[in-house]
Amino acid sequence: MEKQLGTGIKPGHQNSYWLASTPRSDYAALSGDVKVDVVVVGGGITGLLIADRLKTAGKTVAVLERRRIAESVTGHTTAKITSLHGMELETLARHFHIDEVHQHAMLNQAAVEEFAKLVKSRSIDCDFQRTDAYIYTEDDKTLGDMEREADMAGELGLPVDFVHKTPLGFAVDGAVRAKAQAQFHPRKFLLALAESINGGGSKIYENSSAIRIDDRTATVSTAAGTVQGAAVVIATHYPMRDKGLFISKLYPFMAHAVGLRAGDDILPGIYYTEDEGQRSIRTQATEHGPLLIVGGGHHRSGQMPDELADIRAIESYARARFAAAKTKYFWSTLDYYTADGFPYIGRSPGDDNTFLATGFGGWGMTQSMVAATMIRDLIINKSHPAADMYAPNRLKPTAAMVMGGLNVTEQFVEGFVTEHRHRRPADLAKGEAAVFESDEAPMAAFKDDKGDIHAVRPACTHLKCVVHWNNAELTWDCPCHGSRFTVDGEVIHTPAPGRLKKIFTSDK
Ligand SMILES: Cc1cc2nc3c(=O)[nH]c(=O)nc-3n(C[C@H](O)[C@H](O)[C@H](O)COP(=O)(O)OP(=O)(O)OC[C@H]3O[C@@H](n4cnc5c(N)ncnc54)[C@H](O)[C@@H]3O)c2cc1C
Ligand code: FES
Image (cartoon, rainbow, N blue to C red; front, side, top):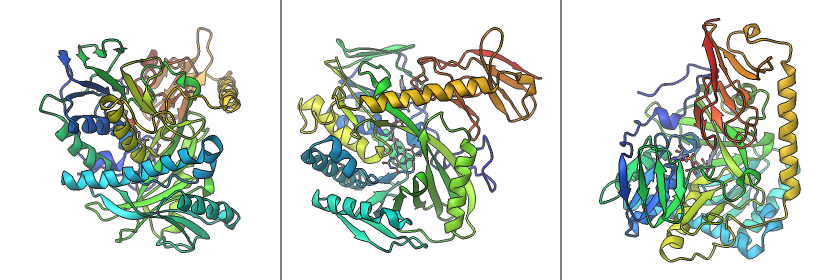
């Protein structure tokens, strides 16, 4: 039975439809020492696709997952499978040779076909549906840019044209359309895929956090045992071990999704616009009728003063365009962007036997499939035509962008702390939170509905940035590299290696 909101966005009531509509997985934790051909760390879409590709190629694999598979970012996606990644092509052409942009486009288009083949050949029941993808605009000033993007996509070989009408029930000024893209239910797909990975010498281990990788022996250690292979793949979203200076090369951007009931018809198509900061639209068939899923609110993670207002703006956007829409779900997550726009896929910098995939820039469905095929080939055949262009150690002249991003972060954090210099946790209203200075050390405190105060140290356990309050999901979010924590300091999203230090939970 799916758990839904009533109507409206209520702080702390976030619930991803994908999680609400599927059972929780229940794989045992690792205990003892095992050997396989390849160890995959991370059980999101990236880790599971990589494990599947390797197993299909005859390798035995072990997947180590910190919590439960397909729940983290992948459990909070919007699952549009398309090679049309917004208006990226002109930007990419500024950083890369046109042949590389072409190769990137073709790999992502091939990934769409790979999903279709995989779903069909395994008969996976995951609501997979081929449908057209649109980038639309309601702002005629951007039409010129969109026409150029459509021309470029066509020249690069994508199945794209420019149209003035879409199946959306509201008028648009124009849209780039890519034919026969796809959408699916990501957890139905991945839970089925996981079943086929597990067995025959391969195994999925949950509640098994990798704490160390020895590249020389390709051994991954957890608190309860080790897995040794001939190769290791890091698929932990933010790489669990930073030998590639990813702290300055990956930028976490948060976005939200709102699920609404809005009529009885499935809307054909999947949609994305860069109007209003970014919005996306798709529908999903459910036992209660179609669910309209509207995404948006793209911003640097942990740097939005009012996340709740940001989500409510998405809800208003949906209600203005889809009559009588009633909100049933909302959820948020983050994805990492790279400075030059290509993901990092390949050998982990400075390593011989360790590979990684990250930096999908909000388009991790097709890019995780690209990563899976590529890493399989790098491990088995030792080569792939895109190895250099996606190499995690590539250098691009983007230092100015990086410094600018870090500078904004520092100033924001400083302002946030001083704002509360003269207040005390007891002054908080119910449901309110703040970072306080105190005589001993700063404190991040939240007062819950019962009046209990939850107080933790605000220094993120990754690199000590001060966490920021997320008033929609009631979490502490780090503004630097994407770590997230509960009000009591438990880690929701890494790279933080451990919980925020708890100071107290009081009843006043
Ligand atoms: C709101 C939103 C909507 C999106 N919609 C789309 C879309 O429509 N189409 C699209 O293509 N992309 C979309 N994306 C992007 C896409 O969802 C992500 O790129 C993708 O899900 C990332 O998958 P992943 O497997 O790399 O990460 P995750 O799903 O986060 O998986 C990483 C796993 O590693 C585990 N882990 C971490 N550390 C360790 C450790 N030390 N040991 C063991 N396990 C560990 C984590 O618990 C987690 O399960 C969206 C992103 C956002 C933010
Ligand atoms: S995530 Fe890096 S300091 Fe918090």
